[in-house]
Length: 71
Image (tube, rainbow, N blue to C red; front, side):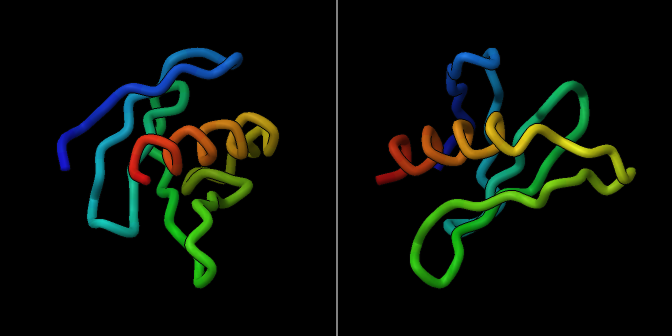
């Protein structure tokens, strides 16, 4: 699968598949790993590797769009 862009109310985000179950998303210059859980839903952590807290509403919107694009 190739990289793709998704558009949410929070902006445009570039998604790069790392594997069929994991995706790297560029959010404000930081890459956030999102992955499918046991139930097949895409989830993200609430913080970046640098400890910066992210808006969970934005992450959920991005996760929903990734699920639509990869379904």
